[in-house]
Length: 252
Image (tube, rainbow, N blue to C red; front, side, top):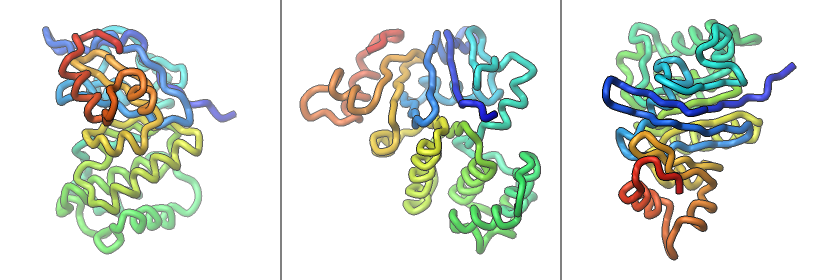
């Protein structure tokens, strides 16, 4: 039986000493949805993603993936259905690009012709010519390509991506945007952050804006502009006004 993917944040707070990075965040993500998290630097976007994948623990509140709490021992099996891409990829420097993808394939027990699947993703990201070079020799853009390919390689039901197009060339960024849409159309959950408003507008079905760790807006791009925008506003105009003017904790 296939589990319907879901992510739920219920009153999630994350503190670092006296600093509150995320405060009382409650939001649910649905399957077949591309969900974009927007916010200024330091708003709590990356911290929010990290509470999903286990790099950070909530100080209060609850994060549930497919109905399972991140505090439950069962979460380790659930996280096998989650693909993650960090803003700055952390690869094994002394593996080649091909070996890195093969390692991920073995880790997630991908069935079938693994070599062919790895070759397919290397080709899609134009990495074939450099596939047998150590990743320590790769540029940041090439490392990002490997990280994104690795996240999609094992066909996870949930994708969590921090600035997935950062450092990528135009062709690879376009491929990533297409992959996000394909994942949505396949009924998966896609959660990503970006600083590029064009990507948020073109790709996201739903946008949540956080400011000083708190949710201040949540809705489709069209809905946000219709309900909160001014005549002639772009999403960027609305975002800048909300994050500059909304008091922390105000949902608009």
